[in-house]
Length: 228
Image (cartoon, rainbow, N blue to C red):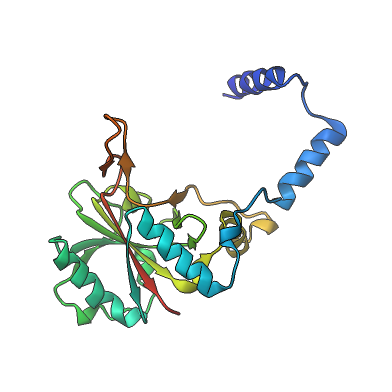
């Protein structure tokens, strides 16, 4: 593996007309990587937090997400049950363990039933938290962990995501900064095995340029956006 990697990188360097980085050039690259310098950031991601929340909703709905805005976590069970009824979906949900510690009164929607663990092909609906919402493009950042298996994000046909307004940031760079800060990455901790950036339900236009939803993942992506 290391030999193949070396050959690939050597080919890239040759195509760029340069040799292997060493000395000051290598040190400069290390400094740039350590500082997480930003590239161009779209101006639309600027503004106060209310602007970012509004932009996130606008951009998410533009890519066929449905967004339900809730006043508190207490509203989650009933609004989730309403959504499933509207879409004629089963009330059995594969739920991420990361939600178990939240103060959500599931008993107010007794029709809902839950299973934990990773998703399987028979699961129609999953419910997971998001780590962040990115207003720039209406994108959600989701991380893998034992209590949030990545299969929950892609296997069920309907993915419901719980997101708090305080988790919405302006640009992609802000979300990565927030992830590093939470996990203590500046002190040398490791990244999650997987970080997924999801913008809308799965789709493809490969066949005659006709958009088909659910090609490689969920056909529906519903966001429960909760005020803090």
